[in-house]
Structure formats: C-alpha cells, structure tokens
Length: 312
Image (tube, rainbow, N blue to C red):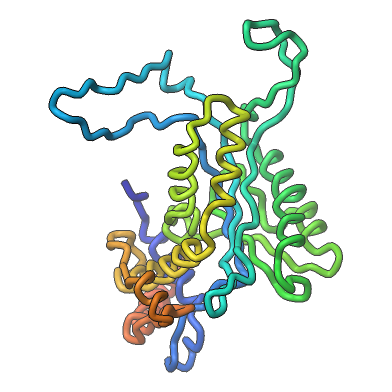
C-alpha cells in the first residue's frame, strides 16, 4: 500500500527531483546528482520473529506451530538507520557508506525478581516513547559523531542528512543540532524529504528490508539478542548491494518525473548486477530531457496558480 498523495505532495516531489538534476537551466547533458554528499536516516521497528511466515510442505508433513500471548506484545525495538552512498572504484570499496544503525534502548535495573533474573539486575529495554528529545539525542550524540568519524574527507564540504516528515523529527534550524553539526569546521545540514515519499529514501526503498532478512536468519530470542542481531546484520550488508539501492533511488526519481509526481509506477530494473559484471555500471542516471522540461513547466504553472489563488 502506497501513501495517498495530494496535488501539493506531487508538486513537491517533482520540485525535489528537479533540484537534483545537473545542467537543468541549459537543457543539455542532463544527469542526476550522484548523492555522494547525502546521508539518509529513518526509523524502523525490528521484531524478534516474523508475525507470519511462508513454508512449503510435503503432502504428509506437519505444519509448523508457532504461538505467542499476543502479537502486540511480541518483543520489538525501534532502530534509527543512517546510510550514505558507498564510494567504489574499479571494484575497490573506499567507503562502505554504512554510518550506523542505532537502537532506541536503555539499561535499567529490574523492578521485581522473576524466574529469569533477580531484582536490581541491569537489563536492556526498548525506550517506551520515541519523542523529539530522543530523536535529537540520537542525532547529536550518535549519528553526527559517526559521520565525522567515518566520512572520507568530509570536513570542508557540505553534508546533508535527509529525513522524512515524522512528527518527532527535529527542525533543520534546531540550535543545538546546528551547534554540534558545525563544530570543528564541519558543515552538516538537516533537510526534509517531500511528504509521503518513502520512495525517496534508500532505507525505505530496500535497505531496511535487506537488514531485516539477515536479522531473521539469526533467530534472536531476547531484546539483547535482537539488538545484537540487527547490528551484525547491518554490518553484513554488502556495500555493492547498498550502491545498487542508491541507483534504484535515481531510477525512481526518473519515474517520478514521468508520472508527474505520482507514486503510481513500477520500480524500474536496469540489470545492475549484469552491468557491474561488465564494468558498465553507471554512477548516475540520465533523465529524459522532455520529461524534465515538461516537469519544469508543470511546476511553474502550479506555482503561478497558487500565487493567483493567494492574491484573489
């Protein structure tokens, strides 16, 4: 199920895509920016086990039996992932793009004695409510230091952290964030992606799904094991696969132009693995000139109509 888009959402999506096309003013040699200076962040719930699984059985084979008290009480924890585009040259990974994945958890003493632990034993628990303060702390104390530690030659260039429009997310103008993001000569800025546009974030576009697939293979049984499984799964993601996801993002942006900002399109497949084997994998996608110029016309008309509506 895809998000329902308003006309304003569609215009914002087209404008977002147009802003990421080089040479648009000249109309010649158009190409999408490679996004080498962007970090995508997003949150996702990870569960100890899948709610439903598919099995192929022999005619006389017994069906697997799984049970729990309630699906709503299944052990889960929210993580914030942060990933950039890998730098790969001639098959050599110079930067894997993996900034990190961070659990929203805390260590607290057990309030009561049970069969599993004694009162006062320190245990890891999910943070109950993910508020704006929790997100802000994660950004300033975890994601920013990770970017500064891992980013290749990052100081002196502008790095953008792209987030969606979820309510707990902080404003790009938050003074505490700006202070931390510009310390020591760095220039890291926070930007919002268009509303209702998970297809413009590589974590929603397939990166989270890849992590989750590996995590379920590890079969965790507790919060501690779940955190460890997700962290290890994130590190096991192949940077080449992550780079493919970034190329898929550029292909989706191209489709968004064609459908005038809608999300009613099929994710295109360009045979990335085959092109990679042949040494022909591109670093960017070339948009259709006609689609791009028509999008400029459509956005301009919409903006003029909006101004006329406000003035009348």
